Amino acid sequence: MQLVAVKKTEDSINLHYETTYINSWQNCLDIMQVIFDDSIKNLNGVGYIEEKGEPVKPIHTVIESLLYKTPELQEEKTGLFVSGKPDSLGFNINVMIYNQSNAIDIKVWFKDGKAPEHFEKTDHAIDKYMDSVEITGHGRRAFRAGMENLNKYIDTYSQLCSKYNNDINFDKLTKDEKENLAKLLIHFKRMGLEINFPN
Picture 1 (cartoon, rainbow, N blue to C red):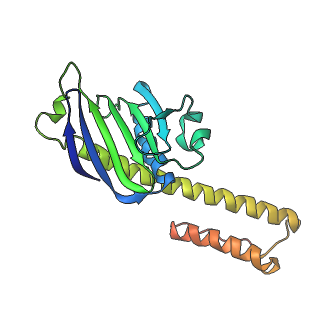
Picture 2: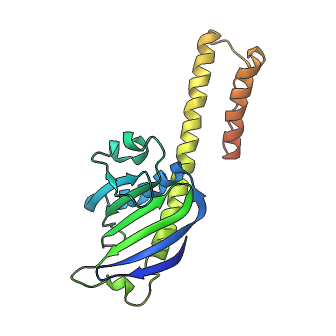
Picture 3: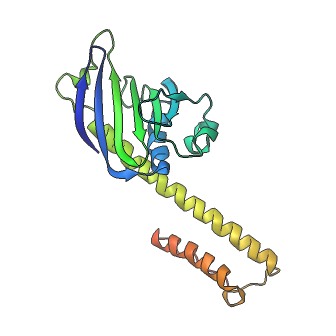
């Protein structure tokens, strides 16, 4: 992640970062989940925007403390917002990540008219933190995608067991059934997991 612009005001420092890749909505959810988790003890708010420049629409309940399970976030939004005091930083920030973009805007609030001491010598005070957030977020996304595919495999195999009275092998399957299972097994192989279809 790269810091590309800095703007200072009387009460804050505004940092504009760019992530390594353009973020899908699912990437946005997992990257912001990292900041949400780190701020859980001092969370100020969560919300989203439908259009750039509009006020943040607040979310009052995050289901099971997981953004991806929250009803308001099931459909893609333009931006996702988290405000809090991450344990790893020790000061308040507002973070907005933008869907189908590599942009992240961060507002670091001053306390008693002063910027956090981290920023006394450099504007790059939270670069390593933001790198860690991005890497951890992509790790969460990969794990979640893997679990989703594993659950699909379990459901598919369970349905086939029911259909064939627990007496199945690959040769008995229809073309569509074979293709669906093959796609899932290929996905697991790419992840380094060998799952053999029972004969």
